[in-house]
Image 1 (cartoon, rainbow, N blue to C red):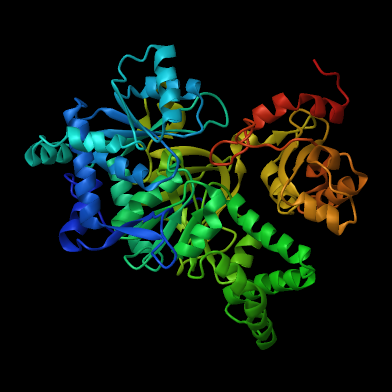
Image 2: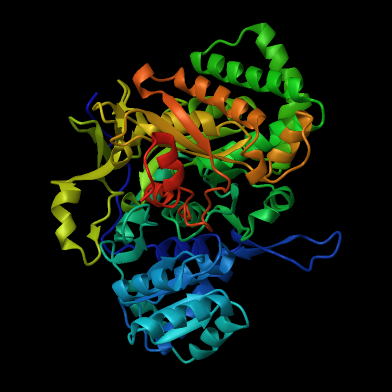
Amino acid sequence: MREFRVPARTESSPETNITDFVMVHARNSPDLTLFSVRNPNAAEGQPAWTPVSAVEFRDDAIAIAKGIIASGVEAGDRVAIMARTRYEWALVDFAIWFAGCASVPIYETSSPTQVAWIIGDSGATAAVVESGKHENVVRTAAHNEGLDHLNHVWLMEDNGLDALREAGKDVSDELLEERRRSLKLDSLATIIYTSGTTGRPKGCELSQKNFVDLSKNAQLELPEAVNPSASTLMFLPLAHVFARFISVLGVAAGVNIAHTPDVKNLLPDLQSFSPTFLLAVPRVFEKVYNSSMLKAEDGGKGKIFHAAADTAIEWSRATEKGAVPLGLKLKHTLFDKLVYGKIREAMGGRVKYAVSGGGPLGERLGHFFHGIGLLVLEGYGLTETTAPITVNTPKLIKIGTVGKPLPGNGVKIADDGEILATGICVMRSYYNRPDLQDETFEGEWFHTGDIGSLDEDGFLKITGRKKEIIVTASGKNVIPSQLEDNIRANALVSQCVVIGDNQPFIAALVTLDSEALPGWLQRHNLPHMSVAQAAQLDEVRTEIQALVDKANETVSRAEGIKEFRIVASDFTEESGHLTPSLKIKRAQVLKDFQAEVDAIYGTKAN
């Protein structure tokens, strides 16, 4: 199949905007809990989370919006947000919309140079930041680049939002409503800058319609997962489009949303909040699987875990085909008590669904989680498509695919295999970049830059990234992601980058997982040592070679990895080798590890 469209199930009035979701809940269900805020001072026996009702959220968002208006921020102005994932992020986001403005998210890890580019390019007249540290970054950026249009920087901490609430006390309800209603369905909602695996970030103009109609249609497709009885714990960056869309969708559907800004607190927060669904990128699911396996192996129960994992995968595949043999059912029930239930308990005990995006999850992991009682609804999208173009649903799912288009969206496969998208999800343009319009759009179709295929039922499968296709010196085209995913699935491996562009053969750079290494060394009767030291061990190289050999079985001989190097340090966001959404910055890796690449191919370093 080359093209598949799904008509929209609902359309909104041209006068609608995102704030209407809050207004409707506050009017019809004022006591509905829209958010829960962590109570850090809760004594034993007291609730760990404080609920925020629809009417409380509406009133506070309006109070902050009035402060924004009183400070001279005009309708249509852009207001930046720079903070970790926390309740106040969502509160400020909605306050900006109530004030008739557009928000510009900035990753809280961004450097002054990156901040300066985003504030300068977007023309933001104000910024709301989390802490004094972030304020220093923003003010430094504004000073260094002469950003005179940035008139205000407000803090979330240190009673900064109280100052806004106080400033807006004399703004009338009539003026607030006039500003709120100034946003129409086709108005700009936000400019989200791509995290930039290559080149300078581009600002994606996402409209109120993108969020409103996509949220309404997603609700109708996913009623089992997103509804007023559901809850989720946000830990992905709200500056990323995936978490941002789920945040708006959650408000639209009346989901109880909590936040955890530090992933170190993720497990205890999951256990105290007990969400019904989660959203994560594939690397998080890999980590959950690997940490569960390592815990079992370190406790001498590795054989039980591996048998349970194989059973979960076999049960899921049999379920997908519609017939589970009695023996498999009995084994699955046994392992549910021994293994699966403990993994679910670690995630709070109530999680039934997880939404995965930001890259392909892999069929094996998808079946594993389904088999333990957590159905991963894998989807696909980009910043330019407000996140989801396609998604699997509880009723329409094929594990190993990223689902069918959401209602209102369509997908087409070009002659070269590139995925093109159309519909209510697609941005209107790149901000300040009319020069990119012709190369980005082909009529109504947006070029995603990804390679994939559609099956006979309209389910999309992602093969790789068009720009990441490696062409060897002999002209062989190789998609690196399949090899990388197979190697990275092992707990000992943190990252894998396949290389070989214009080279005689395919090779790889591999990094070790510092958390998994100590247990691996112990099980192999080796002394404790650093990652750099372990990278030199023959035993470690033998282990990685076995992973490479296994990954090579999934591709043709010409596409297989012929050589690899284990590098002494990991690829992380802090090192500059990962984006905030955990995608590899390939060009930066190749630049910083040129010596290792040269050693593989026998060339002299420049």
